[in-house]
Length: 158
Picture 1 (spheres, helix red, strand yellow):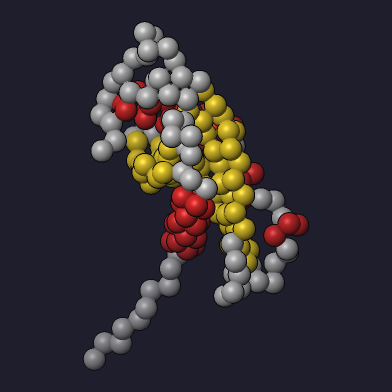
Picture 2 (picture 1 turned 90 degrees about the vertical axis):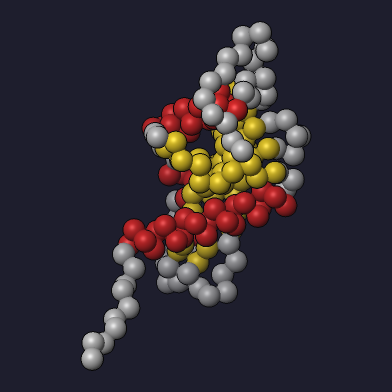
């Protein structure tokens, strides 16, 4: 008889679980704030969009980058640590702009205002810890292009 042994998740697997939970929490937060979720975890050859949404104004396309942290129970208070959204580097910012530009062309959204938001989600590893959600709107914005100059290419969403 061979004894079955449960595999212990790797640090990368645990980080992905935390990230997926943060993205679910962020999506619920956005929906409650009046956003319509157009897509989640959209993969392009050069990157991924965590959440793509339509803003409450019904016109603005919003790419949402979600950054999540789970703090150890015996760790510092949430307000005494660096926020997860501070992890959006200049390189990540450039990649997000490129992703939004690609999605804009593919879906012919050149005539719509677009922006990038960042949502930070964090909680303590305590079983009863309620997540803290911070939504930073418009960390990058682009106005709609006039229809005469707007180009289009690629395959769109749904």
